[in-house]
Length: 165
Ligand code: FES
Image (cartoon, rainbow, N blue to C red):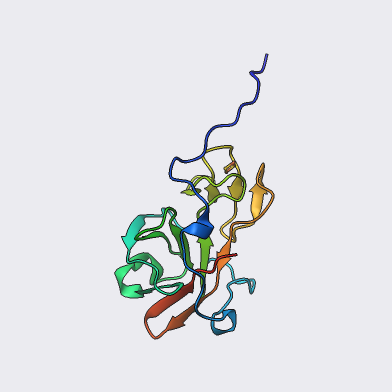
């Protein structure tokens, strides 16, 4: 006999992301959307390290790529946790100079998704949702994709517009 299904609580640090980041100071037009159908090379990264980074300023997180060797070649992925925020951003290098930046906040009830190397998915530990490296839902209960953030490469600096919507 199956046990009744219960919901696990979400991460204790979970909160309303709208209170965590300032509104974007840059227009979306200035950033390259990563939804142009560019795929990661190969079968995906083997791991996703998490690193603290400086705070978001005026709605933009920017950093030198050289500080994150995972982002030097296509297929790399890293979770960057800006100072003062509750959730890391998942940053992936696509082909060429294109990047994809996803929220790690599960679109179901807000737990933090993590890369599952065996499944090659972003997996939510709370209720089992799975997301592809494009942020799309592969398995529920989540119904919406992970939030994606526009970004642009300025020289060797990646700029991410952390909008609030
Ligand atoms: Fe429920 Fe992620 S919070 S599946």
